[in-house]
Structure formats: structure tokens, C-alpha cells
Length: 345
Image (cartoon, rainbow, N blue to C red; front, side, top):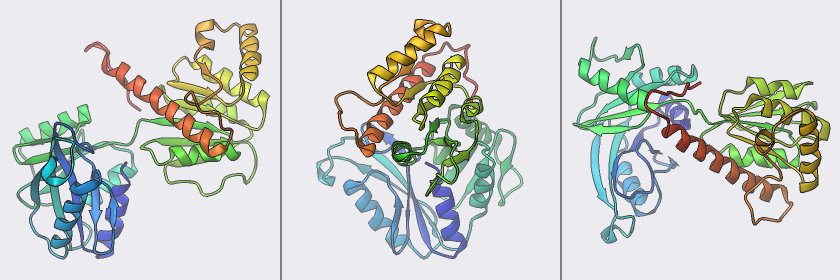
């Protein structure tokens, strides 16, 4: 997730010396992907690059770099028996100490991210050079221009949305998540579901018709109190996931009706029993829905083999099912022909 932008901005703006630790490249099996970050201060670590001995050794290195604006350090770690990890891969880790306040590149990135504008951070791994590139601009306080080939490479990374480490430069796309989830209902189960999902890199719209029902709303969650929850279905972009669990069966039906009519949901889950599903199926047939459309409704929700009715258990089972549906949608999008492109919101 991109919370590191806010965390790093707040720490550096307050004058706290930090070291930004980033996975720049991997070969073979590794605990985290390129772009995974950890912030190290004198008192704590924020985020993770995979745990275990890799993270322990990187934390030790970072602590030794605190307090000075040194040039970045790139280290290679083999995750074998000598490190006490058996992943078997190799990880390139970039250490960047920041001790002189909020860097200009971070100020620019924070503003762009706040506007949900995709960007690529370009970092030299052997010199104190770091700047931000968007589809139509270059943000760099150190010089008026950057080599055209570097900017072009950054924009290629932005298009593919995959980090790349090449020729002493690390290119990392910082893009707002396109994993969109709507949770209808803020009762015990809805609250547990939002709690389970909010730790993911996603955008959640949490919707309920009752007044003053929302408590402790996470940062990536937008709580919406509305007299017409079903109308919020139209606000979600194509490929969204929906979880329907309101206090009213008629309202559940109206929401599911609108979701299925869109024909573009990655997942439509309805809380309830098998008998509730049968009742809803009967009404959908009366409304003229095809069996193909009806089969897109998941009810009961949650991965199989879990029988507990406790809200926290239902939430974990439902979250796992949503993740599986989202992954299947991503795989399907990667298999599209080259002349077919998804429109990202």
C-alpha cells in the first residue's frame, strides 16, 4: 500500500532522521515484491520488506545510516542457508537516508498521489538523485531536464505498472489502487468485513442508510450515509467487488438487482443462507434474469469449509473469497489479446 508516502512525509517534515528501505529487485523466490518498503527510525520500523533475517539485517544496516544524508546504498542479499532463510532467491535492497527535512521529490509525490495521479519515482542507486515522472511532466528540483531515454523508460514503467531496476536506476510506479470494493451494511458483520479488508491495498466504499452508524473508519474507507444505498452501485467502476449485508432483505435484493444488471462485477456476494439464495433466485427469474446472471451471485458468502457464524470468522472467509475473485479477474485481464486494453479508472 502507499501509506508510506504519508508516513515518510510526516516524519521528514518534523525533522526525524529516517532511512527508506526498498526492495529494488528480486531473482527467484523472495518474501516481498519490488517496491515493498520499510521506514526505519531510531525508535521503530514502519512497514515490512518480508520479515525474517532479511528484514533484521536490513534494519541493522539502516540504523547505522541514521542521521546523515549519505548517498544511497544498494545491497544484495542471497536468501539461502547462510542467512537462515530458505527462499532461495536474491534480493536487491536500496537504503536511502533522509535527515534534512521533507525532500522535494516526496513533496511532489505526495501532492500527485493526493490527486490520484499516477507517477513513477526514479532513484539512482549510487548517487543522491531522485525525481518524479508523470505521463506528461517531470518533477525535478535539481535540473531543468532529464535525459529523454530515462523519462521514456519511466513512462514505460508507468504504463506497465511494474517496478524495474536497471543500469543503476530504480523505477517504481506509484499508482492508486484499482481494487475497488463496496460493502453495503455497517452492522456487526459489515464492520468486521471492512476491518478485514481495510488492511489491503484497496479502496472501500462503506454504505448504510442508518444515521450515525459508522465508527472508526479506516483511511482507505469512505463511509457513506444515504437514504438510497442501492443508488451507490452506479458509483463503482467496472470490475469492482460488492458485499451486500444490510439490515433489510428487500434492500439486499434491490442492491443485488442493480449489481447484476451492470454485468461487470468481479464479485457480488450476499450474506445469507441457502434458503435466502433460493428466494432471491426465484425473484430474479421473475424479473427476467438469465441463469448465467443469477449464477454470478455468491450466497452464502465465504470460502468453503468454514461453518462459524461469528462476525470475525465470516469476515475473514468473505475477504478470502473477494481476494480470490480479484486475482482471477487480474489473471483474466492479463490474458486479453494485445489489441484489447482495459480502461483503468
